[in-house]
Amino acid sequence: MRKMKIPETVAEARKIQKKLLAESSFENRAKRVDTICGCDVSYLRRKNVVKAACSVFEYPALNEVERAVHKENPGKLFPYVPGYLSFREIPFLLKAIKKIKSTVDIFMVDGHGMAHPRRIGLAVHLGIMLKKPTIGCAKKRLFGIEEKVGEEKGDYSYIKDSKCKIIGAKVRTRKNVKPVYVSPGWGLDLKSSIEIVLKTAPKYRQPEMLRSAHKLTQSA
Image 1 (cartoon, rainbow, N blue to C red):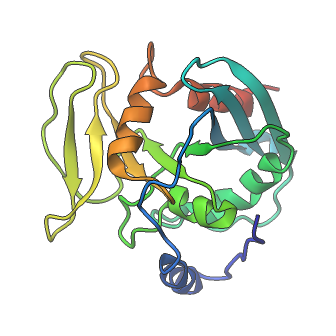
Image 2: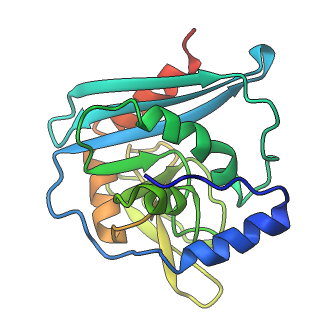
């Protein structure tokens, strides 16, 4: 696990992203997947507390095997600027991840991976820090051109950049329910990312491990 460098400005953050991009990998490096860890971060403004949570599930059985939470008064946070979420959330996620004793094969975040203006979304950045395969599964599109998607569970359409390169997918995890936006992070391809998201969301819009992690960030 690498140490996270926190920039002082957005301009400095952009330079770090460009440098890290050279370490990105969108090829499938997950030879065997037995566990997936969902990760989420919430800022509880009224309490001035940041909570980062991790929830490890067996795959494909989807039994929760471990959870970890890190909570702290954050002091000065990196500003909330679209496209730079990783600098705001990863420092806290790394502290929660350090508490996990289980071996994790894939990390999944509520955010984007390759579907990012500079191809270095939260999932990519975290994967580079951990050198572990990662998936981005977000509720809203950040970047790219999206196409209409079917209404049935399992339907998906691609998200493309201005040069028509595929950078992610709009995926229907439940019939007639809003889709999620899936893009590979580090060490995983888009096809595998879509397949895993669909298999880990048997009942709800979001994968089980992300739902669990989010609930942990909201609990007292």
